[in-house]
Each structure stands twice: as structure tokens, then as C-alpha cells.
Amino acid sequence: MSLLRPLRLLLISPPGGGKGTVSSKLLKEYQSITSISSGDLLRNEIRSKTDVGQLASKIIQEGGLLPDDIVSNIVIKELKSRNLLNNKNSWLLDGFPRTLNQAKVLHQDLFKYDSTINLVVELKVPEKVILERIENRWVHIPSGRIYNLQYNPPKITGKDDVTGEQLSKRPDDNTDVFLKRLEAYKETIGPVKEWYDQQGVLDSVEGETSDIIYPKLLELIKKKFNQ
Ligand code: AMP
Image (tube, rainbow, N blue to C red; front, side, top):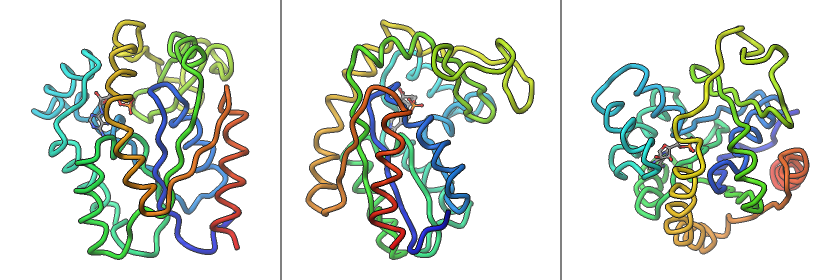
């Protein structure tokens, strides 16, 4: 499937709300879309044992948010290095911006390149469903591929389908840390949504699982960008 005009999408959802799963489905459908996940970029910094990685490791394990300037730098650097700061490419951001300040910093950069975000979709998932899902989530850290023991188990228990490498539990996927992440989300996301709403790009899709949410998201994108 191809898009008739570039899509610059921001997906927002509570932690564990399925941004990662929905993103990978969307990338399969539209091969022209590049995805950038701030959480994956930070986990890569941790693996590479950089200074940012050391800080990220501590904050992520506590369920907090990293300082706006650090995350903004990392994501904008990634957009630049992948040549995405132009008005031709389609991309999606997963997990960034998460605060109003991040949204404004990003907007300044994108505006210079005539490439501001043109669709923001909030994935609305009930909290009880999310908590259950977090406990069943396993990830392949190098690629960011996500598995769920209930809905989307790996072909071989504990191994990544593509590389055969070991899957792991994210250190922040436990109930205590999760509740803190959910609080951080609720505190910061309101002004972000309001800001994008004022720009006329905010939408939402609702459902209990990614299998319900994804077709709704696809429909929305087709309606706005395929014609
Ligand atoms: P995620 O994979 O999106 O759930 O992110 C995992 C963790 O990385 C979050 O709980 C935060 O600690 C940190 N993080 C990711 N994106 C951001 C962001 N945009 N701003 C601040 N912290 C972030």
C-alpha cells in the first residue's frame, strides 16, 4: 500500500497501550514509513553504555521521564541522521514527544523543514487491560520487537522469531514501576493533546486490543492520506 502524501504521525498511548505493536503492523502495511521510538533509542544508549544510557537506565527503572532536552536531542539527531527532515518522507514517532515542552522543541525544528506532524492519534485502551498486558510482555531489545504471551507469542518460547536470540523482560515492566509510568503519562500528556488539537491534527482510536485498534487506525490513515 502506498500513501498519496507524506504522513508524519505521532502515536500516543498510555505505557503498554500498544504503540509498539501497532507501529510494527503499520510499517508492514506501508513500507515507505520509517519509525522512530524514543524508548528504543534510549534502550540502545543503555546497551551501548553511554553517559545518556547510564542516566536512562536509572530513570527508566524508576518509571520516571528523562529530561526534555536529552530526549529531544536524541530523537532530532535520529531524524536528521535518517534524512527525515524534509517534506517528502513518511515517518512515525512512538513515545516522543511526551511533554508539551518536547512537542514545542520538536515543532520548531520540523517547522524549519516544512515537515510538522500532520496526524496525532491517541490509542485509548482501558487501564485494566494494559496492566494485564504488561505482565505478559517480552521484548527483543536490539530490534524492539514485542511479543505477548497471550496474544502474540514467539514461535519458540523465549526466542525472537527473526534472529532466534533470547527475549527479555523490560526492567520497567512490573506492576509498581508500571503504575508510576502511568501516573507520569497522565500528568504530562493532557497539554500535549491540547496543543496538537489546537493545530487540528488530533484524533483517537479506541479498543481493548491492538487487533481491534489497528484496523481503525489504518482506516483513519487511508481516509486522510490515501486520497
Ligand atoms: P517507552 O518504550 O516509550 O515505554 O519508554 C520507556 C521509558 O523511556 C519511559 O518510561 C521513560 O522513562 C523513557 N522515555 C521514553 N520516551 C521518553 C520521552 N519522550 N521523554 C522522557 N522519557 C522518555
